[in-house]
Length: 375
Image (cartoon, rainbow, N blue to C red; front, side):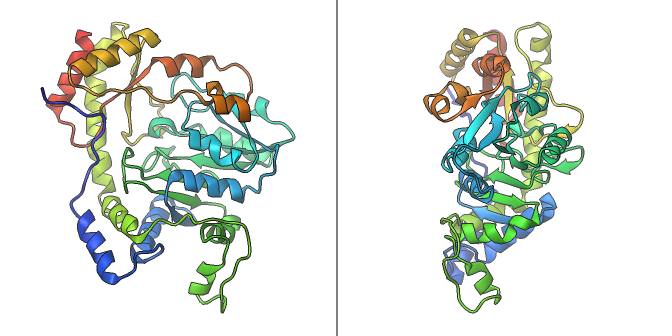
């Protein structure tokens, strides 16, 4: 039986060539020619003031938390249905994640519950664009402006998606992307910090360069560089940037191919949804997604567990997603919940992710959907 994996990293064919060129140029540490090319691409496509490659999206989130100048006891509002890095980055600075429930349609942070979670200690709102579908950014921007809060987009899954025609990653003061091998555009490991609020640019460069003004030195703005602020080493090496640039060049084609897979799943599963056996993803009209993930929502945890096992027997690797952070040991210890978490609790038990990668064939999709139907 031919096994169908959950994910298969997509290669454009230029990755090894660009890596060899970086090797030939003799600069293997960060911020070389390929890093600059990646920065330029990201700035052009997100219309941002500045893009900085990092070694992961986690690193970009950690940089955001340092830039937010948080003090112990400060609060940051976020969904509980997200990856641990969303909360961890702020916990490392002594801040308290305040978990708010998600919307039942998109599984994104419920913008209507955010204001009730704001206290005198709140410093930032961190929306997560789940499955590459944009949060209600107009409302979140208005709330952030009204209460003088930072808006930091966790756009780990959101590159090449948009909300009301504007790219995800362009709404917050700061935004964070991931290039992990499970994402649409990959570097193995990798990420980027997007800066839309120019006041953070100089500090971000310093934090990323171990707390030094090394970037200014290389631009000839200072005659030597030295330690001037807190920071760490958040740069990826140039080989990572070379690999990533090969992917960015083909980004539009990769997204187009993923959307074809997503659309075919959506078409084939419509009758199953109409029979009441599952629910397909809901994409609001204001959102253009990037085909990052195809999930189905089942009746309950038991049904999901049984279907995962059934698909595994058929050689199909389907997986669930996050354990909500508010129910995890660290989430209970470091964070707090505001309001009820009904949707988070229910939907996290019911969600099943189907195999998703650009080279998934129509016949493979038919086999997967056939197996779901036969179950």
